Structure formats: structure tokens, C-alpha cells
Length: 275
Image (cartoon, rainbow, N blue to C red; front, side, top):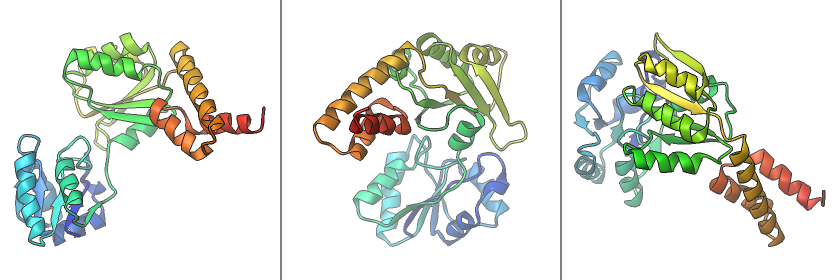
């Protein structure tokens, strides 16, 4: 496989899969965020390959170099400091370029903070919307939270420790004091799930909490949620009257409004039966 994105442990080195180890050993070159961090992991599994630093500041230039490796029929593996590359870590630009150029590509399943945090939160796991890190600028965050306000789906964010309190407080002000869970240090010794309202989590953060954090927030259940439900139901009924298939309508409503799939299907089936 010329290009493979390889997930790496997010805390516990034992989470490395046998397949990931094999792919890295078979690679001609390994692109990683920090050669020192990745060097510890690779040494643990007796992997010795040329390393290329691929991070957010050199991603475009490094991707061009790695595309040359692919053109030379060399196997390229991409890893990040932790987790699956290409989502919130570098790797997507190279992966997209390789796809466009027609190279064979693959992504291995493996460690990620997203799904463990979603389940550990205790909130409804589906449907959910993963946003990643909130925007840096306050105005952009405000627009984002206002856009997310009426969505019924569970919301998932990554948070930076030194910005977490401010971002959670802003969420509570715009989204309301919803149920939420802050899951941190997943798979590490000090793994912790802090469940409560957004304001309660904000208070905990005010006392100082360190580590890698994932925030899971309940979807809209109040007036905004009802307004959104009325909106998607009206659109769904109109599309059904146009003769569009239930499957097509369900997919479009989920994409536009984040509505629960089962709720949309049930609504459409009731309409179809004339209930």
C-alpha cells in the first residue's frame, strides 16, 4: 500500500495494533509530527525507518516531498503524535493529494479520542456531530455555537487545556446550561470523566485541569430543538410530497439539521401510512 495513515496510541502504548506495527515496518519512509515523540513509540516496537517531520507549519511543503516518494513507488506511512492522523492532526492534505493523483491509499482503524469520549459521556451516542477544536477567534466561536444551537444531535469538541474554561463558559451562555461531559487523558493513568452541566464543568475547569480533553455536549431539547424539529419535519414532508425516496430524505435531513435518523424515518413512515 503506497500511502497509509496509521493511528498510534493516545496514551497507552499497548493500544498499538499488530497490523499498524507491520505496516510501519514495511514502510520505506514514515512521516510524523515530532520525530522525538514518534521515536519513543517506534523504538518500543523495534521499528527503524527514515522519519520525515510533517506538522501544521510545513504540511504543504512536506506533502510535496512525500508525493515524490509515492511517484517513486515508495511506501509512505503517516502517523501523528497520538491518535489518527488527518482529522485534527496533519495528514489530510497529503491524503487528498494522493487520492487526486490516483495513488493507492488506506487508513488503518485504531486509537482515537473521539469515540471513547462519546461513549464515556453517557449521553446519546447517535446521531452526533464532531467539530474538533472550536475556532480561535471569539466572533467565529459565537457564530459556530449559534449555528449549533438548534441541532438535536450530541456535540463533540476537542479542547485545549488553557482555553477550555473560556470556551465552555461561552457554550453555556449560547447553548444553555446543557448536560455535558469532559473526558480527559483517555487511556492514560489519570483518565477521568467529569459529568454534569456545562456550568458545573466550567467551575471545575476554573480550578485548573490539565491533559488532553474531549467535551461532549447534549443536543438541543428545549425551544430551539422544537423549532428545529418543526423545521425539518416541514422540509421532510415537502420532499415526500415531491415523490422523493425515504432514504434520500433521511440523508438530506440529517445533513442539514443533525436530526436523529430513527426519528426522521419514523416521521416519514407515519406520513406515508397517513397517520
